Length: 131
Image 1 (cartoon, rainbow, N blue to C red):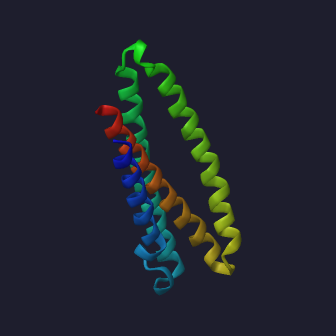
Image 2 (tube, helix red, strand yellow):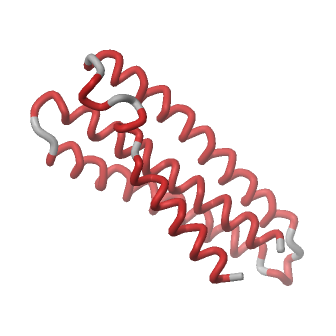
């Protein structure tokens, strides 16, 4: 089962490489259209990530106390806080590396890609936990 989880995480990371910037048209779109597309993608990615987080948190809450459900839930919340700090610093770095007008889209696309990857990782964890 752990191999399946690792494979799914690799696939999620590979899927994130396609990237929100590419999906939204990158350099082929006007700045305002690009930002609107990225903001919409971020909203959808954040919703998916939150739904995945809440689903697995609910699964942990249904586990019997002897199965360490409470400890798992606390670890999940800590993992989410760690992810949020990582997201901020990682995407700030992406923004600083971009040049000029590309800085805003680069940071937003980074957030979308990282939120999607986190949602995929949580979904894999939910499946692994359910089995």
